[in-house]
Image (cartoon, rainbow, N blue to C red; front, side, top):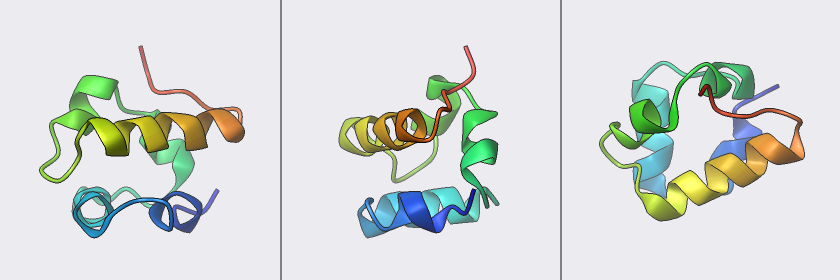
Length: 64
């Protein structure tokens, strides 16, 4: 699924963090662990909550 579904819900720094990591789909987000996503500059607790909720809405989860 297109990453825009998630990006429109995130603040600009979190959007840039995902794009700079070359993550282009929700499925690509789900290939990462929470620790890996939090390690991206611009991703904080609030962005992580939005990411998890959006993945859940689409039947996806972060890698364990």
